[in-house]
Length: 351
Ligand code: NAD
Image (cartoon, rainbow, N blue to C red; front, top):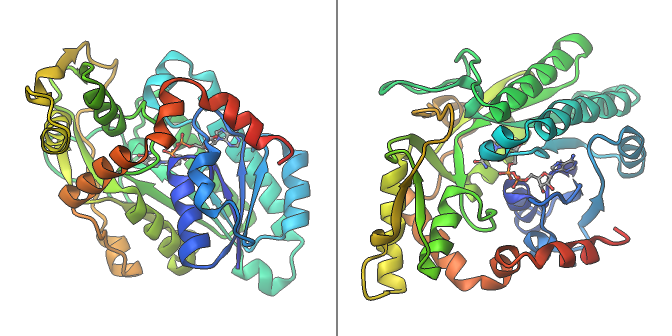
């Protein structure tokens, strides 16, 4: 089997590529534009593997995608390429509309052209799996959880652009018969996450003795899932999911943001004591505009229909993540000091 993974140099995409190539021996062609969030160092473990090819390309480039489909002849597309950071979407929504909506439309059209020319058996077996977020459902009150049937109610430019892409994918299934799958997942954490996101930012700031900025009172609740558990879920959806269906994926690990930061402080106190507890560094800062109060996922369908369940508890996953960042400054130091962009372009040349 050969899978085209868009956004495979990002946080979740690289976890999927490492799982497919390293553990499952699946052939992968990674397609990534290497924006600020894409990092070839995250693919270093599979760089030399014959089953993996990295292609430096933009998902909005239709001609390039057509050529790639013709050349690679994938059996499936796992579409993860996106602008993914809510704060950036508030400061500059245009890139989110371009990549998440126009980019998804372009990948869908290239996939449809390729798929419609396949022999009948290969057409039936082909899959287009769109990777999305629980944020498309808006925010929850204190009770309940999102399911596959939750109504769409996105509230940030990021979640609105992802909601639009979900609707496009469903329309391509309904109108053209493209065999699609959609998964909507809760917040991910784990190794190789860009340090603008909550957990790596707090670990690295804590190590440096810098402030730990917490929005508002840190009362927002998120449902956390280790990225390797998400990668396994994506593979389960792709290979065992029914075309046309949606799967809600989550860790069943709801935590207030402040509780997450405090849990990280405790781990840093134990591993890198600084004399005074790390929680002294916590600073409450003005809340994000329109900050959603709570997200949670009911993943019963994925558990029942796919036999998937997370392997990490939140506690074991946080231990693993903190230990990974402590052991891998070679990955995050170039990002923190800004030098990785030069390295990255050097590495990408000719790819
Ligand atoms: P990320 O920002 O770490 O990675 C995105 C990748 O897409 C990067 O490698 C980037 O270079 C690439 N990319 C961006 N624009 C591109 C373009 N125009 N052409 C080709 N490549 C491009 O994001 P992530 O956290 O790994 O998220 C991956 C997907 O999963 C996204 O679709 C996101 O919406 C979804 N998702 C993320 C989470 C989460 O908690 N991070 C949760 C649920 C769903």
